[in-house]
Image 1 (cartoon, one colour):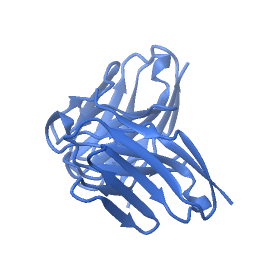
Image 2 (tube, rainbow over the protein chains, first blue to last red):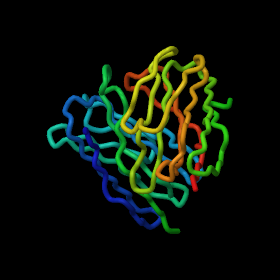
Image 3 (tube, rainbow over the protein chains, first blue to last red):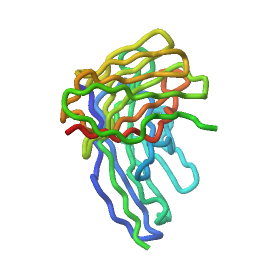
Length: 114
Length: 113
């Protein structure tokens, strides 16, 4: 079974700090790496995504860093705010065929303390 | 703009009972998905429908059936509920299956006693 391994399981950060969540994957054929954000009682929502032809993508305070050779990618949240407190899931997929479905990591629960 | 709508939001069943979870999307998406979410397990794909008229098994299909009723609607049926099926169920849709953002509903919280 293809896997996406996510760490840490939980993370506590002070307001204004940097939150970093890491993911590692096994299948080198994966070509799409999204991050989803989920608030309690809600469904996950796409936060930011990257494809392997770039090493970094930034959207506001959220940045994905991608290391193709290490088969790792990470989410950085700059200037973390209490409103960022949520569960974050990384995922990976490959276009086409049976591998076209998203494989999700197990999630990281982020708490940002005021 | 509703997006993905799931009904019911909460349900309690007894072991052996059956029920159908409903999902509808209004974004004219071709692909739809059913996931279950359990503590510490992330999201696991139960079944998906790449396009209207097709359905395929995901990672954890045992004990479930699905129907793609039309382009908008994709239902999940538990024929004989078991306590191991206690979970939060999410429906999602995307424009197509190839590396497209998935839009999720707010889930159905299902408890089986």
